[in-house]
Length: 267
Image 1: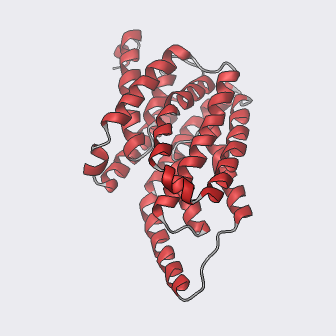
Image 2: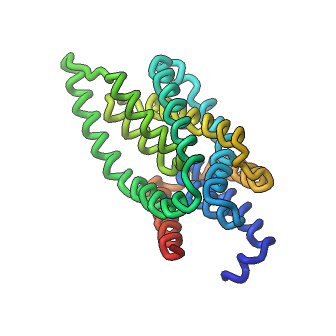
């Protein structure tokens, strides 16, 4: 197997396949970077360049999410501005810190980042159920005239912290945004998804610009991955409705843990 993937042709084939599958995962559950980032590393790129190239490759696919939630964004425009500002601030800081991280240091962090992201997906089910119970209690209190009003400053600070992670690495950040918004008091799942998309899109978008401006993107690999990921996201639209979410979540966790174990094993 190692001999096969030492062949540049097969590395290109795997990059395209991995990016396609990453597009599928991002469209139906998230976690596509578990596949696309290691595939880019396999092209003998420096770790920071691979991460920057991965961010640029998958970002255009997120634009369609904003179009899908545009009405919910309009209905929550004030909160969308807050989440967008947090995304820009945190994403900028994360991207700058990444670019100033030594290559060897970042490579040592990679397995831990992958493991942390995989564990985030692993606990997403129980955490989501706990948040649903919390929201049900808040709905009861709201019916009694005790509505919970989200506090804007703590929400901004927490969203900026998650956005910092997005700019630096980012896998699993969507669930972190959703958890944060639910804890802040938002109960409408469509509003939560819309605000998550705004923050994630702008955090990744500002990182996108910074990485390009700094010359960290290897375009021949980026464009191949970008096209394959966009195609994967497009063809997976129907699969998102057919496959149960627990199955998708389990698949993402398994992929993430496998990639983390691989990088731990390689040292």
